[in-house]
Image 1 (tube, rainbow, N blue to C red):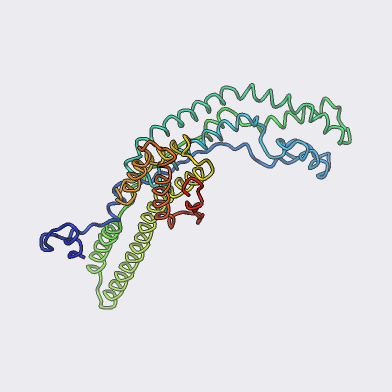
Image 2: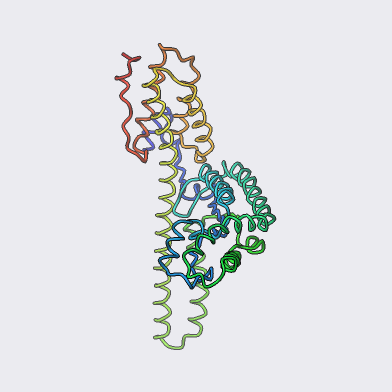
Length: 370
């Protein structure tokens, strides 16, 4: 290998020294795992007829009523528009996290190159979530009135299915009183709504090994000092071997996960390049031109991939440079075929990393290239 490298750069083999690089160590030192925990009372629970004090009607009649008023049957009576506000914020928060991280066996790996950008967006969304929570706590008394008024008519319809042992007014008021008890209070909302992020460092296999071995040495020294017979010493030594086997299994498992992380990073970067270029080539084929939307998509690809390429992988950067160079040309009908060929060649190179094994459009079929 060293001779081949020396020949390529025009140096003597003895001038080139081997530099051993632990790529696993390099990867885990360049980022953290981010766990996003967003939760709230989902206001979802199967309400029974007992919850509403409706022992006097049959199960079938109550189920028929529930089917007619779906929200009553499955949601604890918070207007859907309010729930959607929280759902949207959570969706945006997770989208922000996925945009700047890689999916790994440990969770979302956030490179140091994207951490500040992710955090800035996350803090804004966390603030939105908190403000919406405070607003809901303030509004819950008014929402409660809205909900009860909405179901007053429903209660009157349900009354028609009872044996009418009570007056309609008593039935409706009893129904609404029981319903009101199911609606969360401001204090319950305060306790149950949360938006948290946990940041984790991935320990390397060597660190895990050292930790276990330190514990082993301490335990072994203590046990051997206390051992009085050869049988006791043999037992301690057997435990030590079991401990070493455990360390080996843990290290092997962690190594496999780090290998999976590196594979995931490679696939994500190169797969994104392939997918974007495939879509651009399809657009060129359909329009016989490079559209503004395609240019915008390619520029976005370059920006994001450079940010995510924290390991500075040369083939990825080389592909981005070629795309930039192609975009810098004033694309006319006569040069479009060259641009399309550049994109096609890069996409072909990275196609193996695509999640979907879609075929690239055959550039020989492009009318503009004939």
